[in-house]
Image 1 (cartoon, rainbow, N blue to C red):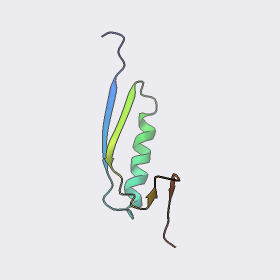
Image 2 (image 1 turned 180 degrees about the horizontal axis):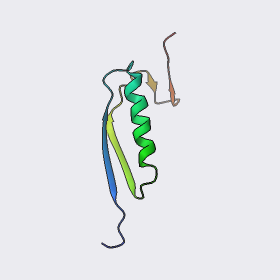
Image 3 (image 1 turned 90 degrees about the vertical axis):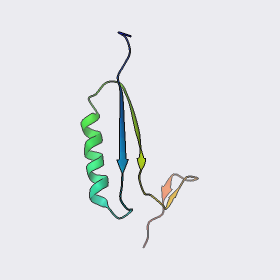
Image 4 (image 1 turned 45 degrees about the vertical axis):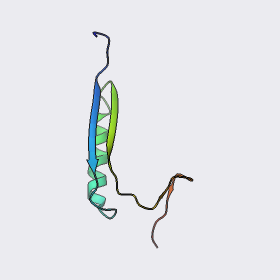
Length: 62
């Protein structure tokens, strides 16, 4: 297995859809992983209840 690449696994929990600080910090954490070689898997609860899977868009409240 000398030629195998590392696998990085991360978990994320966003407490609620209005928690902007948490999602900002998550973005910063992702930037820190940019130089890492290998596969990255991210799992979690992103609490994006208004995400439309049909149109890849988020409905924002007005």
